[in-house]
Image (tube, rainbow, N blue to C red; front, side, top):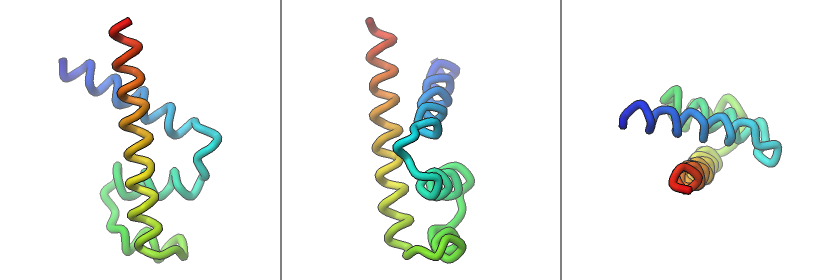
Length: 78
């Protein structure tokens, strides 16, 4: 079961990162904060955006990732 979850997560992450509607900046913010664990303050400073922008972007990207995962789970049940 764990392997299945990891596979679904990886597929969802690939789909999210391949989405042309997601900006390169948003992808960078998400990868740096959600997968690499960088602090929001450091990411914000390096990209010249506010910390709030980093938090909102990460939350929006996580929501998209959850949506993709749910869609993948639903496709698996069909």
